[in-house]
Amino acid sequence: MRKVFLTFLFIFISHICGAPKIDFKLGMLKFKSLSDFVNEKYHESEFSRFINDLGYSESGNNWLCINRIGCFGEWQFDESTLKCLGYRKITLKKFKANPGIFPRELQMEVLKTLIRVNLLILADYEHFIGDSINGVIITKSGMIAASHLGGAGSLEKFLNSNGRINKKDVLGTSIFDYLKKFRNYDLN
Image (spheres, rainbow, N blue to C red):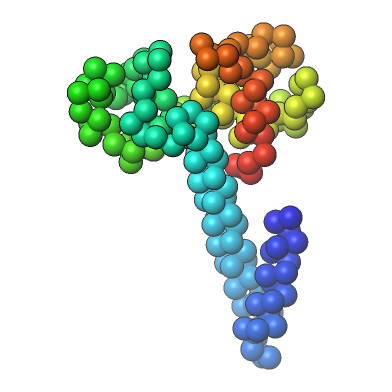
């Protein structure tokens, strides 16, 4: 789909914007620059769609949400996760007293940090991308979401066991569920 879009964009722009005597190299540089720009915007929009949908799944996109097990914020962070990421001053007790200590912008920053950390932990598991386990194709976006749900360790156990070890959170959502639900985002 992306290649078709870029091809169409190139043909359209070259017919509309191209001057008859443009040097071929200059034209190719302009095309590469435009192609890079479109590619960057596409991936930004895919990431934005992914984190929005993850937030909806976790809390209905409510940055003030606190669930019954004490995870809080739009992406339902646990205190221990925040502590591991260096956000020791943000606790459930303090958040309940003053949600302003953990505004949505900071929650987004924490989410991006958590994603980077999980991707580093899962670097040795990238070879699973494209494989199928229990009928679901493993994708990078699915792996990010599943590691957000149950931690990178739970995802590693799922992958190493070919799906036999499928941990669930206290609400009954499993690693498999998130691998399936979040498999269709282009986060490469």
